[in-house]
Length: 295
Image (cartoon, rainbow, N blue to C red; front, side):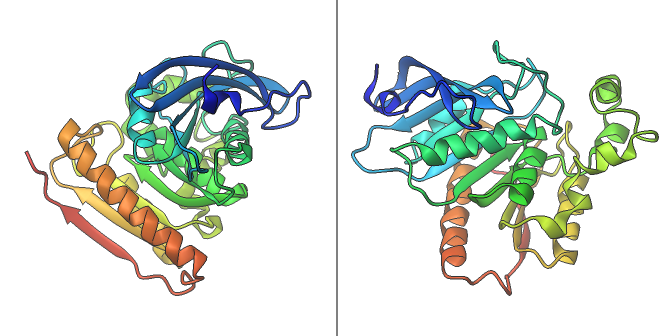
């Protein structure tokens, strides 16, 4: 068993966030450790990837919130390796019902606890600093990350990239997803409350972390209107946020630009953490801007 993964302790009790099983995996890149972790969430065995660079000292924690549902948008090892290389211990929950995990994913309903308990798991590891962890939510993962910023302790800066902020808008925009949404969430007219509880624009005043909004101006899967609506809701709630819109970019960015965007994300997160620790978010400076695409 690899050194990093071996420092996780297994637990036979079904306490939330307790590790049930660790499966060390081959190193995905030089100096990066990887494991598949089975842990408990609401009594269910659920799974996720853990990755971290070799380090003698505890590392800051980061939780990556995947998009999609079930087999669509599953966590990619390459993505969490990219994040771990930046000096973070990274955990990426699969959400319940995936990769042999128990339960059934429900798009920001009870499965949100799999994220909350993943945060608890990561913060409790010996190799992770006890500070609040950074969250990056991609696509549907954005609403998961913002739910955590509303309901979960130990959450630091939150990045929402190509993120869903209004599930009712998603229902209108994505005709191809309506059948799934009606099956998993309900009908938007009969079950409007279920859509609103999954829509950060409806409860922005309860978000307790600074937020960075990253969005492509021609995102074909999650329209840029989601970014504008979230920014408007955070502004109205007097919450700290920054918005970067990338001109001419869609849902997934080209690789080289993806690296540059990650650079800007981690620069923003470092500054946000400093402001949080210094108690300077009472009167936040808000920034919005359009970033030209670089081909």
